[in-house]
Amino acid sequence: MPHLLKTKDLTNKDVESILARAEKMEAQCRKGKVKKLLDGKIVASIFFEPSTRTRLSFESAALRLGAQVITAENASENSSAHKGETIEDTARIVSCYADVVVMRHHETGAAERAAITSTVPIVNAGDGAHEHPTQGLLDLYTIKKEHGRLDNLSFAFVGDLVNSRTLHSLLPLLANYPGNSFHFVSPKELSVPKEYTDLLKEKKLSFEETQNLDEVLPKADVVYMTRVQKERFKTESDYLSVKDLYLLNLGHTDFMKTKAIIMHPLPRINEMDSAIDNDSRAAYFRQAENGLYVRMAVLLHALEL
Ligand code: NCD
Image (cartoon, rainbow, N blue to C red; front, side):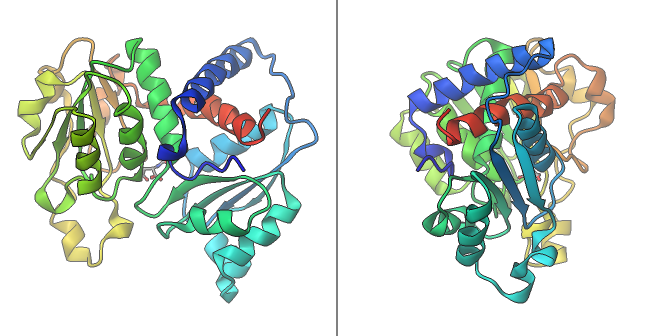
């Protein structure tokens, strides 16, 4: 079954076909003529964690393609999970009512567990600090659209790299292209997990880990900011000690390449000054819009259409 649980499960062919499909979806949306390829289908979205972009862009994607949507937002409170139902049981039940299930959960591995009992494809919309594969795909789509290529680019990933599930999904995708190099900018407590640097070593791609944002900025083609993930910290004081370490502001943009882009999965809290929004290199709102087109493509892929 074509579940989408993590980006490592996708073949290069899958990725290429999703990106090409997303481009078609974008063109159709711009013309206001979207083919109703999901007519008669039901998409369930079940979110155990807060979301704005992911849930609404998935639901919009489904509706634009002619599907109908059933949804449980705030599912930790408003679904039977509140009574103690397991993820496995919830997935088994929801899959009786829909053709594809989009699920976000606070536990790492939740989507994998749901996939065991679900009778329809599960699309992981974020599982704890683990993965967020559709964000990885929409980030890849954005980079391709903005830079015209996915190889020989220099990336700066900044902030909470241990908990950023969007980084964890994007990196394995970027590691498939030659000549990419990576600068990981974070305090030691938030550094990128070893399995990802191991992957880069295996692919013979160069990377460095540093705490110095100023040094990295002039080298990067893509500056990817992340939010410090407050909800993943054990204590408030652990969070407070790292929450404001990196703030990208107008002063920084002077040191960036003229063709660099600034990305952020959003929401931003205190890591990007809104004064940079008017800089043409600020790509994060375009990135969020791309989520719609990529999620249309992902739904079609999951339903093998
Ligand atoms: C991200 C997430 O949920 O992991 N948000 C999103 O889906 N665009 C990033 C975040 O919450 O910081």
